[in-house]
Amino acid sequence: MGMVAPVYYTADMVRALPNDGKRYETVHGELLVTPGPRAWHQEVLQRLNRRLVDFLAEYVVGHLFVSPSDISWSHDTLVQPDLFVVDLEEARTMDWAQMQDLLLVVGVLSPSSARYDRFTKRRLYQEVHIPTYWIVDPDTRSVEVWTPQDELPQVERERVVWHPPGVDEPLAVELDELFRPL
Image (cartoon, rainbow, N blue to C red; front, side):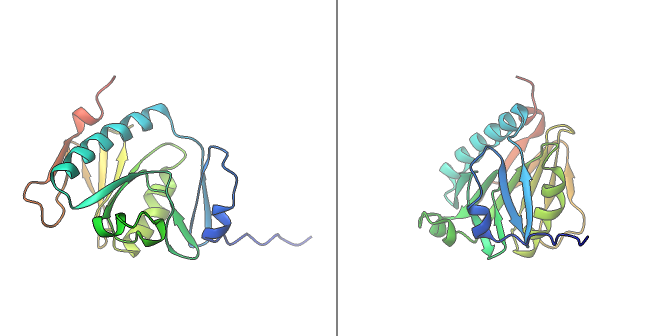
């Protein structure tokens, strides 16, 4: 009996999958499937969202989006970052296909997404030169900061800082506040 060849997924194939509450993505043809996030994931995501919205209202360097989304750099890649800041001119197109220059990408880990966020998607973001990728780990109360050239992350346990070009004061997020209990 022969082995069944794995399916090589394209972005169009992923777009055609059912809307069943799972997140479907593909990176270089590999299908990534994750269930709906935990409540703690969503709480941390909302807290970061508020901080970024306030920062970008003061320093208009880009526009913040929250998943679901449809970011693709090639026919076999489609990702849905939890939070991401897009170059302002690209964001104004309101067309996912035109949004290529992400200034910041944030992934909040869940047990089901950790491998994809830390390895598969992190390597993709480095390949396409995302300047800053935060991997937020609510369970360890830390943030991994990745840049395109990094072989290892900078692991932050007190505060995480984002300083986009053209901005005098960076955004600093205190991790005690980000991860405080309800």
